[in-house]
Length: 395
Image (tube, rainbow, N blue to C red; front, side, top):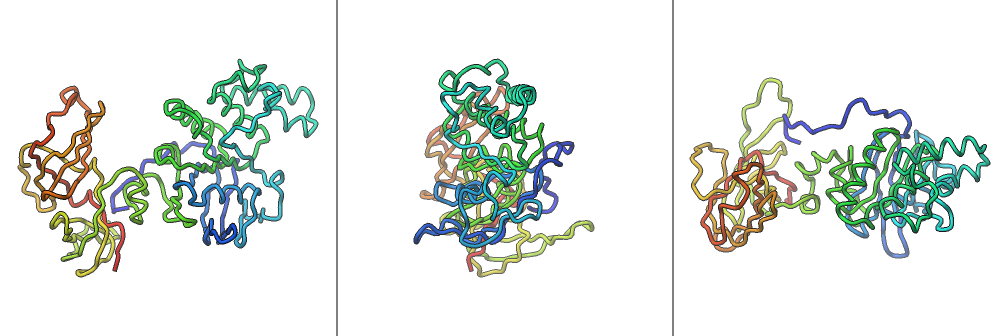
């Protein structure tokens, strides 16, 4: 993150005393010749909502199953609050799992599904009654206690699964793509409810998803995974604004990504209280031309780097911007395709007769209710050197 950037945080008063610290140390796992996990290490803090994010086959579910105790790693360690849990079976790890397919007992009522583990422990009738009702209230299903799973919607079934997992009072709740079977609107609603439940109970949530928006919306921190490796760990703000690799930049949201040659680098004057040096670099992008970008990375002329600029950071206008600031990048192009989506318009702009740059214009005011820039219009694109980002140094 660049100096001065402030990441938004969740409420400081959240109860973080009930969960466990989870540390994954050098975990590897292969299935025959396929390496599912390659020396994965990460630390998840007590009470944190932590997401494992990546495409199908990246290893995130395998890692979750190792944490849960359903798989055993070839090497490495898993600890809860400093205690090695690998020798322990799943039911002794103080962790419960919510599965994608709900895994409810179809012949039991909602009440009995949630009460199942308490019945196994031979809890008293009064304890079962009070605790089940408490957790049904938590997931807002108190009026559905006597229904069978086939009488519930997908979202209600998922709430039953969450209540059943939480009633054991685990220190870690593992969620394996729990919302993927739901439609888009219900998924958003359930995501908010899941975040609220986490805020209320304060235990550690480890959430597996391939959906970038889900992970960015609810996570305190997340790990982006690909091909068995953890590529970056950070807050949603860190991951989105300061991607560590080309893959992270492409996978998290939309972006414009180019290979570029470093032409020159100069150090910028720093404020007295700034510890990290900042540099202004001039890059040559073969498909685009020369641009300026600020960076805290120590790069040198002659190196090849990856440069990214998010579509919403680019200003699009019919008229040439009047600014004369030296840190503004300015290009002229033609609208190749405008896509109006109500709250925003996405423009595909052709620059230098060949390079397509994606631009997103938000419609925040009444005067922005429709696009004033249309297909084949000549436009200017501009962005500050502070809004682009050098992702990787290639050589």
